Length: 414
Image: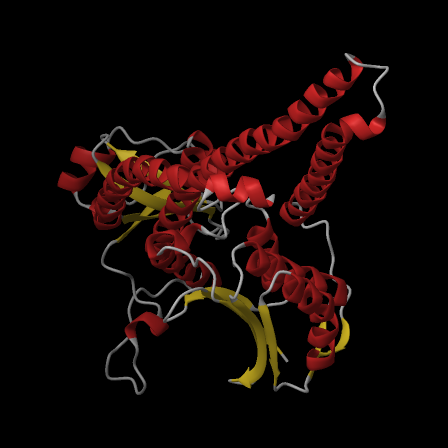
């Protein structure tokens, strides 16, 4: 929030300075131009004498182009000692009230300078040497009153200050809101990471505890034969395999989060690939008295990572086998829809409750934890499946069958 506030403040400050400088230079540019033009004409006419007016009857008359005096410009002639020579031309009243105590500053020759008379009236002036040796004039000073310009600048300065304060206050509010929005995904990621670590620790601890207990039990009877302790050894081996699969799944998800895993895409013929992956599952289903069917209607070729697609189908088919009973059916269907390849994996098993469908792709989510534990599920498979589909620029969703069971619909670009 502090960095955002500092950034906004610096931006507004620079913006205000630029705007103020541009307005100030624009306002004074015309007065400065008038002074320079008049100086040029006076210095050009020093030999023949300066003529402050021309007749309007002359053709093509343009008062400013002809060089007539701007009514606001006051011309002061100084001698070498710093005395005003044209006191009568200036007017006694004006001279006594404003210029009587005014002194000549020779350090500003040929530079347009800002000055204030009586600390009340702002003037811009241009002082230059008089080169005409036929008179007593040593210096000529052209002065123009800039009350109007100074008033505009003062008002604008006050407006800029007020706006800057308002903008800084708004910056505080904006910094607070933006900081909150920026930190929100970080907090969510942190919470997910903490939850992930907690769930992973729990899943790892369970098989490790079982293996440790069974091995300690074996150590209590070192003289026993392997056949007598077959169940303990088999359970330890089963938990070891489960632990190995869990570690592999966790590594896959960790690489997915870090974007470390890159797909190796190659042409894949959809129907033949699906038929090849499903072949062993047909045999497993028949051994469990389940009906397995295929309906392949997509002889298209897609660019995909064959290994990851194989992993995707294995996850979906494993779930279908786990959550179906005897006499249930499992099927895979392929077809084309909206220029995309569709792969559907259906089953007539226990299905998914409607209220749980939005959560099934979350990591470590299990609808029936007791049943998942029995079947070896850890709640990571569908998360990996969603990641694989997303990396292929596709989509996956679950549809509840009309009678019973579930259908997973995967869309992949051709």
